[in-house]
Picture 1 (tube, rainbow, N blue to C red):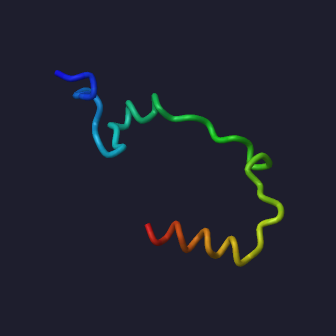
Picture 2 (cartoon, helix red, strand yellow):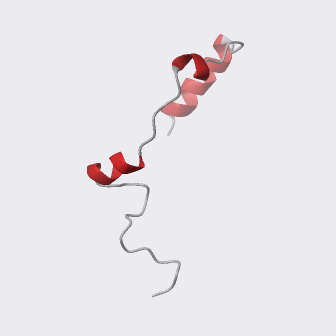
Length: 53
């Protein structure tokens, strides 16, 4: 087996729920994530980009 193979890890970024919880991290407080100078147009573009995926 080569060193690049990792048979114990699912591919595609999917993990069983128990393992996903082990990889989870807390989000920073909302005040730390706030972007104060974001325009309505920038917000709309952001939301549209997320919805396109």
